[in-house]
Length: 138
Image (cartoon, rainbow, N blue to C red; front, side, top):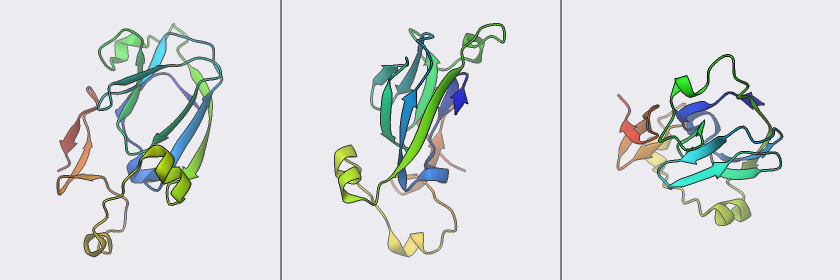
């Protein structure tokens, strides 16, 4: 896969039952993967490996910036990061334990849904693209 920066998002609605494992292949281009709710920034360079919960808000941002800004990725500058990715099933007890993922599943509500969703405090949520903070989905 490849990216040229990434606004804040989560991948839980497509990949809620798995964790991502990414191996970055590109040289350091001054970009970080930022997990704002965890206060983590991981510099991206060749050989960096990330394993993370797909429901955790994240973005690929310019190192030293406060957040995602499309102007940090001008068309005339090579900001492309290439990486290999694979999925690890969170239902596997070893993966769940290693990542400290706690499922909070309401079986009666889950039976009524035909798509994966992320909820917080009893409300469906998505991510503010500019900050990575949760917001109520309407």
